[in-house]
Length: 405
Image (spheres, helix red, strand yellow):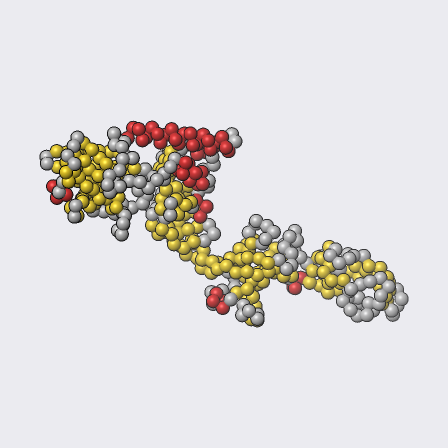
């Protein structure tokens, strides 16, 4: 099935499900009606209660104002309780105390503000009850659609966070694999078999030379396989004791990385390095083989990395970006970076409970290319979306998830 059709099916299923939930569970409460404090109006005859989440200058908490026949009721005369049933069955039980002209909830309403709200108010011997949904960042998707869209999940738990520093450098020739070829005996160059930039194999004849001493010819043989990177051999010229060919084995190259003083004391050699080049999306992995003793004019020290280059795609002179692992931290709770999405002003992942998915606002710590440490906002053992979480973000935004309470 085409991706566009799948997404339309997802949106259609989601809208239908959300509509059914809303109609079935609001119990007659019009959650769109707002009171003077921007709270939801709850009515039972001529008894009215305005309930709002108050966030100005304090952590989010419930505030309530009551009237009877449009006349304000003294908060001390009301016994109010609110229960919030969150996705997964966790219940927040909130009692209220008088504060000025309002009732104030006794606990912080942590994110996400998405729950089934059950309200019980006792006043003058009468009990008033309401129930309604106050959902945000939540959607429901059938398992068949989840599978068709390639939505993958994992369990949040411990991980190893690699601490890294970013550096830059360039590809240089491996001078340990360069051969400078001279004639064993001086003479005249009769023929030259290869040109600059040609690839030669070990044992190939590079040139034929007539010896000055014996006037017989001999073959100049390539001692290694590689590219001809310098050529000073021309037919008819004397060899004159000079280097005729420089052959560079390009099966390995060096990445020389610039390490500045602020980071130098964190590198000893042997650290793992991930290298990115502008010509490939593939990340190269190797280790620092040595720290060079010289300091460059810009006060950087060179960290040298040996890279395998079997296809010759790493060309000398290419500038590269690298990330060096300087430490590893085992953390009790982490999520994969690919699962992160934005929601309002938060970074979130989507937790899965049954067929429902809901945002979890994250407090983040250390980060690596793959993992993000979680300090708050997500319980260990939570199943969360890793791959294709953007589909849930699009569906939640389509359904108009808001922050109204």
